[in-house]
Structures are given as structure tokens and as C-alpha cells.
Image 1 (cartoon, helix red, strand yellow):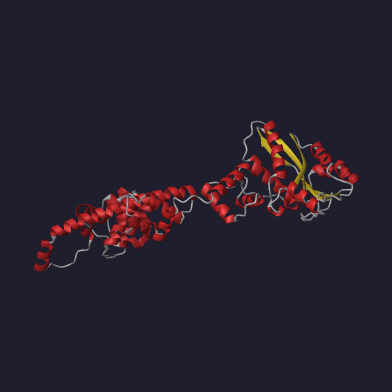
Image 2: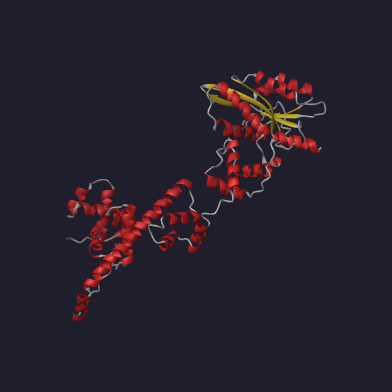
Length: 453
């Protein structure tokens, strides 16, 4: 067979990769088989031009086993494996595989160069039967190791696809499940965990779960709030019910139960236009209020359901985030806002000094709206044009409501949607707790502060 320099081989590979000629044409020109050229191309794709530099290597037995194990474990062909490991030829790897199958592990050991002396030849002949027996035993041990490795990683892969990260406890559980098929000592070594960890897990396997009642309670809270609560809010709710539990423990138990918060992250984007002149931005993002009915915010959001559009207009008190009232309609007309405004005025007393903040929507620029506020002695504040962050609290409410209500529920009709919306607003005001309200709902916090005062 003609020998080629590395430059000639690289030139042929690049000629093929340019796409001008096919394998058969280039191989015939060089006088080699098409498969040889394909092997060169594959090696070049893995290792570049260094794949063809002259290199004489004595491969160790362990290296040969690692290559064969890789091929068996990943199901790659001899062609692909030889190219990946930059073997001189496919025949080299095929020979290793054949020797291991027919003669055992000893056949993979490097042969000493030179002619054997008569003494060594006689010794080799006398021990021929013994080494053959040893080779079969070694082969059986190697096959058993591969079988154990395959069984272990199959179970670990199944666990990782379900829960993500694999803990030491998970590994101990896999070892426990395979203990009747393979030696525990070998399994523990493969899992990479201390033997003490495994036996500690086995020792506590039959013990009653100390967190049974807590798990039931966490699941109950999660179900009551229809998956809207994460581990922090569940921790706060547990505190309200007289259970002092660390948030990390709640997170761990939720992971064991396979439950997590279903609410999606909210992002806000808006176009910033010219600054309006109807009313100044008196609020200036000061969203803190010392008492109820001191600062209110309002806005309108749109829903699309069953081919129809619905518009929601709520009024929110910045003191506790409570929705004072709301209106909903199929058209964003002024009565949607004026009706909501009249309903919210019922909450006011003669002692209240109120500021109402909104964006620069046309509803809030109308003379009727401004006159209604002026008649009640209410100060009007408006966001800068196109800046949703100036009215971030009501925007945040819309995001929470859509994540916890609109995207999680299935509605049969518009009428059904309105009924469920009423239930959600009631839930939001009276049951949904907030960390910044000391673990209380808006209504609970308002009642609490009035009692303390």
C-alpha cells in the first residue's frame, strides 16, 4: 500500500471539504479505497491537521479498555470511535475488540520486542493453560463491571431527567436498589459516595418520616392557593399557622413532593414618549403610605378571551396593596372609569386627604374625571408619558393577577371568567399573604393596623 505524507492527506481532505469533488473521485485519483478517505476526513474534523502527524504510541491496557468501553457505552461504530480517538486506522480498534473477545484481557497487553529466549519460550508454553483460564476470568469480570456500570447510570439518568440534580441520598438509593445484583462495595465506589453515607441512609430507611405532618400541611397550603405560592410564601403561611420552619427546609420538602410555584416571571417594557402636561407627577414613585386612603393608584388592562376583548379598571390602595373596587367591560369607555371612581369614593371619610395617581390615558385627562377629583378635594397625579415604572405598583398587580389567575385557569365562557375574577380579587384582598405586610393579607394588615392605632 502506498504511503502518503501528512501534507498529501490534508490536501486530499481539504479538496473534499471544498465540495468540488466527491469521495470516489478523490480516492481513485490517490489510489486508495473510498472508506480510507472518509476516515481521513472524519479524523481531520476531530483533530485538524495534527491527526496525521507521525506518532508511534504504545497503548496501555487501560487505555485500550477505555476506548472499547466508550464504544460499547455510547454505541458508536468502530469507524467513528477510531476517528474520535485518532487511531492510526480502523483495523487497530477492530483488532483490540477481536482480541478481547477471543483471547481475553491478557491479549491486550503490549508484546515485548525481540526474539524470545528458549527459557522464556518454555515458560510461556508451560503456563499456556493457566493464562488462558485467567483471561476468561478477567473477561468475565470486565463484562460484569460493564453490566453494573450500565445498570447504575441508567437509573441515575432516569432520576436526573425527573428532578435535575442528583444528591448523595439519590445515589445511595440507586446502590440500595442494585444491591442484589452487584456487590455493594463496587457500587459505592462507582457512585463516588462514602460507604458510611450509604449505610447511614440504609439505617434510616425504615424509620418513620418526622416531617409527615409538615408535608401534608405544605401540600394543603399549596393546593389551597392553586400553586401560586413558592417556598418563601408557604414558610410565611406556616408561621401564621403556628409552625416555625426554616425556608430551606420548606424548599427541600417541596422538592421531595415534586411541587413548585407555577407563577411565571413578569417583565415590563414600554415606549417613552413626550411628557404630558395635564397633571404633574406628584407621586414621584413614592409608593409608601402611612395610612389607608392616603394614596391610590389606578390603570386599565386588557384581556383577550374567546375572541373578545375585556377591560379591567381597578383602584389600589398603596397603604396595603388592597383592591378597593374594580369595574370590567367589553369596551374601554369613560363609564368604565367613572363607575369605578364613584364606587371607590364610598370608602372615603371626611378626614381623608387623598392623592390618586394614574398614567396619561385619555380617561384620566377628561374634564369629567378631573372635575370629580376636584369636587372631592382629591389631588391628581399622573405618570410621565410611556413610563410604566411611575405606576409600578398597579402594573405589578396586573402581572401577578395574569400569572396567578389568567394563565393558570381554564374558563368556559366570558361569564365564567368574570365570576372567577371576583373570586380571585376576594382571594387577593383577604387570603393572599405578602412578606412586606408581615405575612398578612391586605385586609388583615389594614384591620391589624387599625386595631393597634
